[in-house]
Image: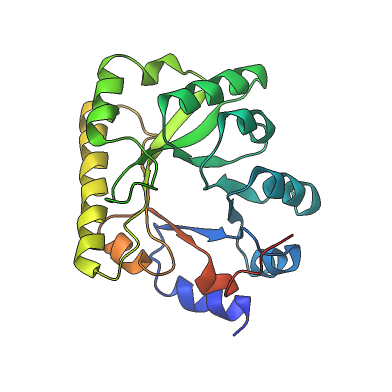
Length: 224
């Protein structure tokens, strides 16, 4: 099936209040343009150099999401162009984003990445770390960062109960943060969870933003 057909099918499973980020990493410009011409404007990339190249070549009204693990030495390059950084997984990274955003005279939208799974390869804050960080004023020290919500990745498993448990955990953490730390902050509203294999379960658990790649673009054609 074509990308346009895939998108039409996926849209029937995503409620209007849930945002779709088309995960375009490792896909060629032509594939992104097909999704763009089908009406999509939010695209996700995980490599800084690939994002920079696509930003230069593709339409300027695309809203680019950085969805990979972001190294602090790469922050400066994407700060002026990124719409949302999904994976802010450490205090060190948050400080660097704020530093580079101040230099660029902008405010960067970010999500706090929460470590949900038991896999050691996943990045993110624990629930305790987030609340300790807030209680010590850490989040408020970054005026050039706009915290828009949380992001999490479920375990890579076929155990649906485990996946739903982790999604429910993220929703619970979001609710606590909203009530205790961001009660008067209208920007704090996003729960980014759910990918091609589990986005419907994520939406059922409260996701407001899903990141879908292979179900739109097919198996990835890795760029060299």
